Length: 389
Image (cartoon, rainbow, N blue to C red; front, side, top):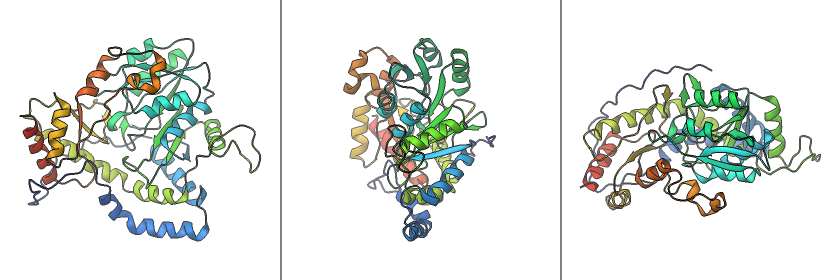
């Protein structure tokens, strides 16, 4: 699916509104979105209650069709959460015990967790120092006779170098499986996130660009057999009621969450454009702060700014000062996967992935969300400048 890659316009002043120096700015404000869709959600939930179709049902089927069309793929199967989505995608491709799956060290633990839950061994590689996306050369070097897939993470709202990774996958015969949990609406070379790999997993955790009112996820694919396998796995290994040909899981999208996702999907492009405007504004506001390293965007990417992540020295000190000023900054992520106790069995240690480790000690996420005001961003920038002195 080809889409318009017109660059976002420069941010424009929003008027004379001001935020006092004592007013807090949250990291994320979901109430702004909720107010915009409240009536649609109320009406949709009434339909679900009236029909009793709480698990899957017509609303879920409609969302699956709409989101597949939005991403430019043939199939979308809703599941219970994003972690299950990654695991099911791998299982649907026949990946399991004795297999290896390559993924970046700097990701939320769920990516590696899903690999391990599928029975495979996570093979971690470092990220590129600019943009924090998986290093393609290191991923290619990690391919072994046991490698079955590479799982790039579309981190913070921009796609991994999928064209280059596709070349690696084609050359080595391994599958490309996207972790697209942070990239709903993002694109690279005119192709949406979720349309590149044999399968793509995404999360609709409430804080995502496309978020539910609880946990939810989906697997996207153009392969009808992969889609069939996902639908069987999510429903106790059953394609026909009370017939279970394999062990499966209880992980299905429910109708109430589908109502929320349908309402939000209609507004996703508008909200992502608001995120791009906010990111442009931060770039202007922070340009003179030499102590702040601003995020980078690859030239062929359309970024959707799930997070706005900068780098600073003495990050934890700066974070504490921001919190003291009422600024809801955060860290994504303070501990790379290879240094997590859950994956001590991989026998990695400090120094194995220096780019990921350096970033983990310096990254700082600033407030960004659809509806954030210019005044709020000015307040964030002023508080950050103060925190750095």
